Image 1: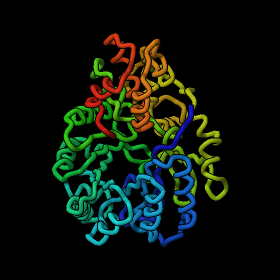
Image 2: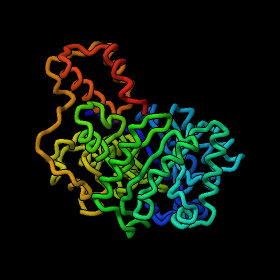
Image 3: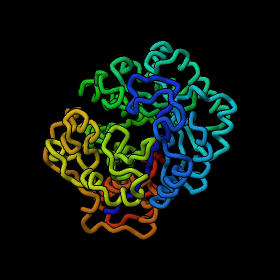
Length: 404
């Protein structure tokens, strides 16, 4: 299989104006270069390498707080000029009108902003700065007024799990394009926080599925929760496209992270380096890293290896590493007991044929959800007794899968 990075997250700085309790990077106030951050020239070289691997990749510029990096607009502009889809991951507290204007003018297509409670005091306590809730909300208002798309990012904890539905409703009211619920992996400053129980995790995924099914202008998604697709299929076994818009674990397959000093890791929550950009080229790391090859293998252990959903889910490799010390172990948060009966592989389509135009349409679907959509099409065709997939059939089914 030819693995292509579709999403790249670059922790461009460790500097941050907040002190979030769960920060996996342990970000803090630092002078530029205090943690040996990649220079502007090194950042340009990284962007060029990403574009060489996939000129249509999503590049997420995050931190720390990326707006504290003086050259962030230069880096974003260069990435945009190379064809990359540039997104900014920010805490939202620095978004005054001048900053929003700069962001919109340098090719950044959207922002992800953090909101962890409807109670300003709870959010401020979690984020480590008084006034951060109101500043973030004002940032959302400014983005909406400027026509700049934004997403709301919430980290699920014991302290806010009961108000997730309210935060989703509020995000809709604010005009967010996407709501992302992140499930904590205990690394960095968050390694001592109390996790949700597996039962609470499962209940939260069911809530997200219910909110996701409402449709509308705002998408609702789970992050660091590949089980969402398994839950969707279990609750809607006759819907071949249930959860198709979500991806399983992409780490090392269609996603990687770059640390401030140039280490390339499978994801932000796996502190295992596949190589450093100052010692080896990105292309070589992506294609040749033993760590990445291991994560791309099908050698999952325990019940993840036996699970009928392991192709669409596979469990969270970062959580397995953090809790069990082995990235290939079973995900300890999953309650599902495998039946041993595997779901149909997308290639196991028998005599089913695709017209060239239908194949071209499939190629336009984002890489990391294409296999799930293809499986849904194949299952639908077999149920209906079809032998040929045409563009007309795909158009008929298109309404079942909204654009990612």
